[in-house]
Amino acid sequence: MFGFISRRIAMALVVMFVVALISFLLFRFVGDPVNQMVGIETTPEQREALRQSLGLNDPVLVQFFRYVMGAIQFDFGNSYQFKQPVADLIGRRLPATLELSFASAVFALALGIPMGVYTGLNRDSWLSKMFLSVSLVGISLPTFFIGILFIFLFSVTLQWLPSFGRGEVTQLGSFWDTGFLTISGIKAIILPAITLGLYQMTLIMRLIRAEMLEVLRTDHIKFARARGLPNRSVYYIHALKNTMVPVITITGLQLGSIIAFAIITETVFQWPGMGILFLQAVQNVDIPIMAAYLLLTAFIFVVINLIVDILYVVIDPRLRTERGRA
Image (cartoon, rainbow, N blue to C red; front, side, top):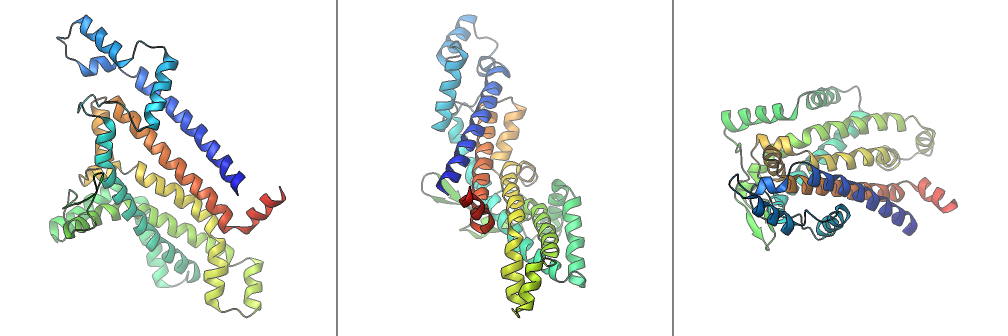
């Protein structure tokens, strides 16, 4: 197991190195940082002095090494637009995005797994057909349209939930604020979390249903029935466990995509997370924020894929046997 984890970590470091190179090229060759930081009245001498102070006249390898060392220390320089350190801007927005992603993931898993198991075991019932119809709606409709419908129904018409913002937040320490400890914060996160997690929920449900239908036809399930095991043990111990490997793969990637692509949901609900910050950076060609967002997104995907690879070996004993023989 130690060797397996070491190889996966080495591969993750290679991926992060490539992403850092792409991010550096974006930082280095897309636009001129000096032009973004000064006005038209700045003299050429002042521009050259600023370029020298920023280290833009150094060799490219030196700049790349300095950029990587800064990224390791979570130092991405200053934002062109806000004139503040990028790390501080992301640090203030990161709790909102992570809480929204966490709530969306809990919603998707808490509903997707039992609905998938139920539709796989009772595929001809009316409730299963209703679940499948709802899943088609969740997959077919775009996220922004679902969010607008939720706002119109629950915020404008029924006036049950707020349509924008994060609500009242509570400060935990010096780096984290949460809305889970206030009533208004919990109400504010419900609609964005359901909007963001609906597609993932339907995908997980349909995947588990398909895997359950396939596993229930295998020989070891027939042998378990022949042994006289109760249906609960057959379904939830033997069958469900064998569906987890592909489910973990898709779920891990989807959890990463929730964090990386929450931009649309944050825009619709004006959620003060990293998605809106990234959109503002794109509109104003704020390269440091764009590069930092790219690196952070890649890091999240790499960590999730590493966890998924480890869970493969923990859940599937066949992989442990094959690695032991190797």
